[in-house]
Image (cartoon, rainbow, N blue to C red; front, side, top):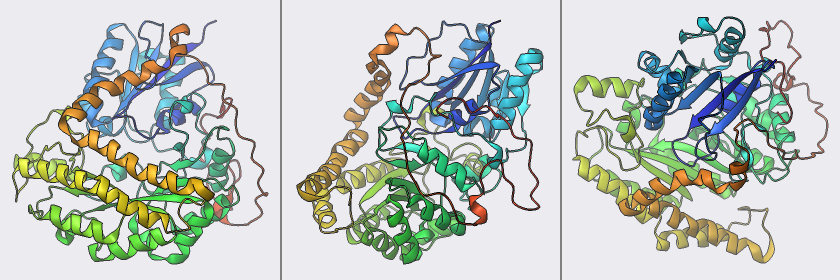
Length: 507
């Protein structure tokens, strides 16, 4: 008898670092359900093949495409489930295009939906708000189904925690998850062990890897045994202790990305950022002394920003010598306090979700500058920071630091540093020059056609055959409470019923 077939589809914002959201859902899918994962920017989505259940996730800038796809499948009599940040924030809106909407973390709800499809398909309807899963009871993400080999070998996704302990007004992370929680470190290390052989570096997709410093330190000590380079997102306060930065470097950390947001202290205070702008320069210097790339994310257009914010930011960037940055307008995603306030004040310039892409796309009328001043300021700041002259200056400074890129030695080191700096000039020029951005927006979807072998498969239900790496590492001997493995319990701990016991091959 044929198994029930389910497609999990993601519509990414752009060609970005892969996430593990759908790979985690695939891992808890019952074995009676045949499941596949499709990233529409990296694989042709075959609309004609028979399927019983479709799960779709997309962020706000791509939610209209997700709704159109959901309407198509429902028109063919397929059960459709929508999830993700936008669907969680706007469940009633999403329910107009789907049979069911999953709010928040999806493993428990997706598992229940699959079981309902197997027994009583008509019960699949409405909004699902199930308790979040016990992270220690979850199987490893099904990265074999996510076709990770189609992404860059320097961004293999790994997950150690969920959520963020902070509550910035413009961020939806805390509203998507149930508090800040961590996986057992044994679970994280198993993700590292099972990485494919072609992987060159890892990237922790956590919202904030350092939300629990004790846990993070223990994790870094264990990662040091593997010697795999990695990048991570952390809040800036992680960089206050030189011992933590040294531990990160010894563990293989090559990049720390933080949301600094603004050099305007009033903007930080009024958005609940809980940061001190005058500390930023010292924190960045401490990171880069260890040979770690400091990556800063900056926002503009807050109510307390005047047109001189761009010059003040440029002065800071030049003085600090920070090696990587991204710049964007404030994006008031639906469900955030910022969105509710701007909607109440009538300051949203558009409610077209396609415009919520950030960068120089202005969706909120600023208080102390015009939309054109905001747009032009971000564009000019980006092009100044990623000018050939400035990148060459940063290249010279990075080349003097012997701790930077230690994996490259001898004559290859300087050319690699030079390339990484000057490639950024190209990368951000086509993102910020309007004509080139127009071209990029039209070429990016064509990426899925470069995998010619897809033309001969005729199905999205196929598994990758990449070989996992063979990693020899010392056994875990510490008695730290963070290192308990899945299947083991700390004394006195209550365990939820594990979901998705079948992890599948290569998971």
